[in-house]
Length: 327
Image 1 (cartoon, rainbow, N blue to C red):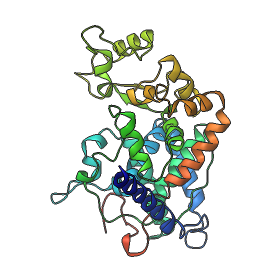
Image 2 (image 1 turned 60 degrees about the vertical axis):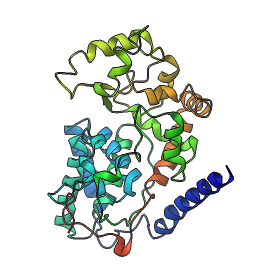
Image 3 (image 1 turned 90 degrees about the vertical axis):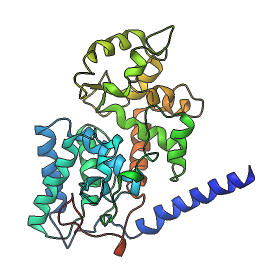
């Protein structure tokens, strides 16, 4: 037991080292001289994309999570596979990442390459685009430090087990975050990203059809809500892209309704509903359900911390010419 505890402490200490050592080189004014129009170009690109494609904010937010939790925030998830390498984006769990998230990064990169060629990393673009889009949806504004370099590795084989799945136990979910230096409270705050976006029916179909011998529906669901999901997802076998909003009440607003839904059995994913059933996470669900300001502050701090995780610098990274391929 002592050996396991010491090992866990070493992992957490190493995670904090990764967070601090490279993040010290980042600054909010990184592009002030090398690309003075950076902020304006990012704002224009994200605004136009969100207006034309309202699902962009949720898409970018999910893409950002899937990038940072695997190799760190280094845009490794943007790399396309080749004959010689199956990249992260082709890992099973990433196949459902929406195209709008990738597209907003490509559009921003194209504009920035015209204004200041070879200067701005794809990793910084994804981090800032995510923040801008969260704010556009009514969410909190938080500071994004800049100066990340783009990663040199992207392998599908490194993805499994490093990203949360709806079917994971609470212990597994907590381990994914605590092993990277995040607290349980920060995990719950980051889960609030599900206040926007949607989930594919196939991700929770086993909980609304044929759940058990005694009930076709998982009893942790609100019964009427589950019946509505069964109706909405009826053709998911024929149409795998069928999906439903994560937040049934205010799906287009970044707010604390996600937390208010959970005690009522209105969470789409099992991992969402589990947050209100576990004594380690329930107090934070209850806090954020009654206090949106507390949620926004916690979410902003946690996103700032996540954006610094595993950041690459110096020879450990590069400034890609194209976000989907290494130089």
